[in-house]
Length: 463
Ligand code: GDG
Image (cartoon, rainbow, N blue to C red; front, side, top):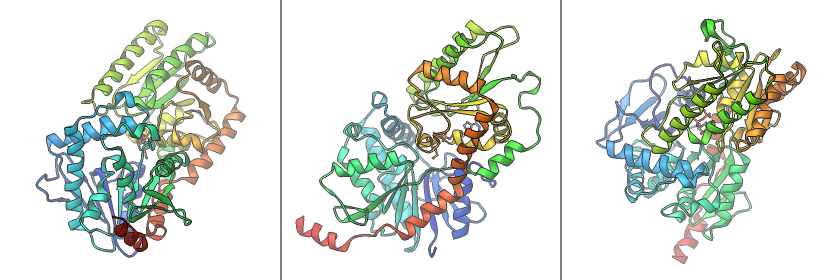
């Protein structure tokens, strides 16, 4: 790679020891190219139009700060109360205000100006996620002609839902300013292509690119993964039993940011239904780790209350003096402890109603002891289910279906558990996050066509 890699994400990772698969993978890619990571940081960045450089080894970290208004309108408002529910098929939770939309556009414009002044002509620009969909358009308006790629971590919206947006036509136009649109799954690619197919401004070219006015773009799927070796090592390390003296003999685990897209209320209901059906001698637990997120948004407060209510009802009905069926931990647990918990669990419940990929499913599989593995119960609406077909696939809207799957997971013979785990692990190993980031950078660097001169001429004549 001749130029640097410049990554832009909403959150700038902090600290000297990167943790989390994505951060580790990008850290390596950035270090190799002497690159730069740009993102918001609440305490360190400046909001005066200048980046603040954060000390770091191997590559540069540049922070900007969101003002209180920007945090409220751009981040909580447009990104997380319009785009997030829209992409997760919850149009009923979309809440649009012109202020939020305007602020989203303004932040993208401001960040584009700051980024443009930082770029060298050979730099590759990799933008992450829905917070920055218009960023490439803003950069192009400033004359930036570098290759720019976008990776959307969340599901691509269905065509009909796009008309909910304040300016629906802008969505495709904004995306077409990227050379490469990276999505998680083949299903996401199909939905994105459907959007372009429906748009008279788009034309499908024989080289599989899409011509959109004077630009060309490409849409590809890059299923994200985890740092497989790192996660296995964490799971295998000797450490104290995370439960201390009070560990359950048999438990299923759930690990999710407390988000309505993760299908937690139905998971709790399904566990309650399973408790009705179970053989009386079995006293299993559901250990649910769910750190709070976006608590300023009403929908997130509602789901927290709903889960507290369900936990109370189910435990009230089934608990005994020495057994609490649901352990609902509404806090974060450290990563190495989490890896041990995955390994001890007999089953993991991933019951998302919509999910870009879902890394918890991959972490659970990587953490298992292949000689005595647990069973993954997986929603067919999580992106990971597209490839991980040997998990126990469930419909997260069907409580009985999930209750039966929990029963089946707890009773599954060793041989079947081993065979399913072996196949699921092959999927996890094929999508290691280091390979994922190298692949995205390689495709961005080599494949997508840049600006199309013939079409520029045609477009100018037509306009
Ligand atoms: C978005 C997309 C896509 C959770 N609780 C704790 C904790 N976690 C970690 C998990 C896992 C991560 O958070 C969650 O990853 P997911 O993939 O499940 O979900 P999102 O945060 O919604 O991420 C998603 C992802 O982007 C990547 O592209 O897969 O579809 O929505 O790594 O382990 N980690 C620790 N303590 C916790 O309490 N240490």
